[in-house]
Length: 143
Image 1 (cartoon, rainbow, N blue to C red):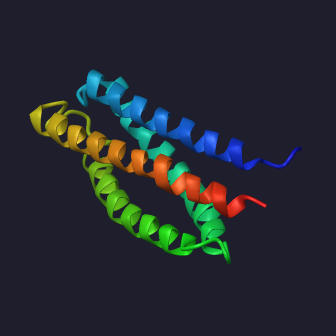
Image 2: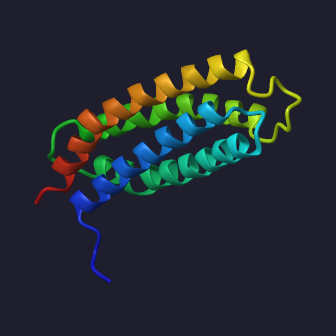
């Protein structure tokens, strides 16, 4: 099996970003009151967990070990700290809604508003990752 290249790794992370956003949009479209909407929400939780694990075990350590490549360790620490806050909010959201069978504002206005805020926050984070964090990783991995 060939080693994963930096370009391939970054492309995979970006693909995961798109799948996360698409899955959340599907959950919003379908609503929490449907089994399909709840499945989308649960799938998004799983996608996010895998994505964060990949960043925590592969991306941030590479940036922290990039000696002589500028301030990359600080970039990694800042993004990791910010993500802890964001992921805490996301996990609270998932805990509140992913197991719901319709009892907790099933697809209602509160769910729609909160999901909208989650999607906006995630889009903003993704944009920062793809324009600042991933180029920093590419710089760290450059020979």
